[in-house]
Image (cartoon, rainbow, N blue to C red):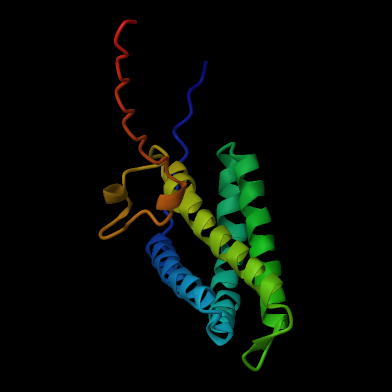
Length: 176
């Protein structure tokens, strides 16, 4: 019986990737604020940033991370990340195409697509930071935030289980 060394990932550019994730999370906060006030120019600005900065990052992930995930036996996870990349690209392109000079043709649909993009980017980054990168580094997935680097805060608190409220004690009914 042979044993193999644990699969590890020590990409020198990992700190840069983490910084880009943090920048993307800040942009997602800007996007959420813009959507709340229907600030289509700001929605467009964030989508342009995603197109110019984040999509090339996703292309690098496709070239570097996905083969590593496959080698680590996480083929389905790699497929999901790749599907996320395609959907992010399609959504941002549709949003950019749907905006002209501060107005949009279909505010309702535009807002729904932008909200989907917002949720997808946040979820995708959370998956990479708390599952993919630790897995490839030989650490346990879903590390505590302090294990993810200085000052890192988990971006998707809404996806975490909410604490249950304590149940009220039953009132006793006399005679029972």
